[in-house]
Amino acid sequence: MSIAERLAALQERIAAAAARSAGQPVRLVAVSKHQSIAAIEEAYAAGQRDFGENYAQELTAKRTALADREIRWHVIGPVQRNKAKLVIGCAWIHTVDRIELLEALDRRAAASGVIQDVLVQVDIAGEAGKSGAAPDEVPALLDAFATREHLRCHGLMLVPPLAEPEATRPHFRALRQLMGELARVARPKVQLTELSMGMSHDFEVAVEEGATMVRIGTALFGARS
Image (spheres, rainbow, N blue to C red):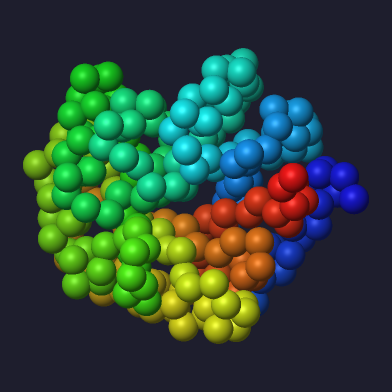
């Protein structure tokens, strides 16, 4: 199948999964990490506009090469504080998980004169060595946005433990429930409306549990060489 055919099939599956739940709009973020410019252009020609990258330097190179395209870039990998300047100006940064990173991004956004849209990454399962704030750390992290003039938080992001799709459902459900609880408290510069969760093998379960963004690479582009 071509990338265009895979994209159409994925969109149908996302729509069907959304119809089985709340029917919420879902944005497909094409994970273009280690994919060629030609592959991205093929997906773009088929109508795809949101692309996600894991590495700041790879993102910078692709943004430069595709500067004439109307692409909405997403940072979906961990961001080192010393690389913050490379990712400021992207439409979304999905992986804010600590105060130090939040502060670094705010400083860079202020220097660039932009308002940066971000999501807070949560480690629901408490996996050792995995990025993400623990659930009980998230309220304080959200409170910190009040004094950061150049950041806006729009929701939460999750990378669950690798497992069969149905085994990931409790993690997706827990994140949705956590966001519902957090949304009961009004916080300056925080509007919890987005849930970034679900990848190629489990995106349908994620959508059924309330995902508003799914991050899909292999199912769209094929296996990386």
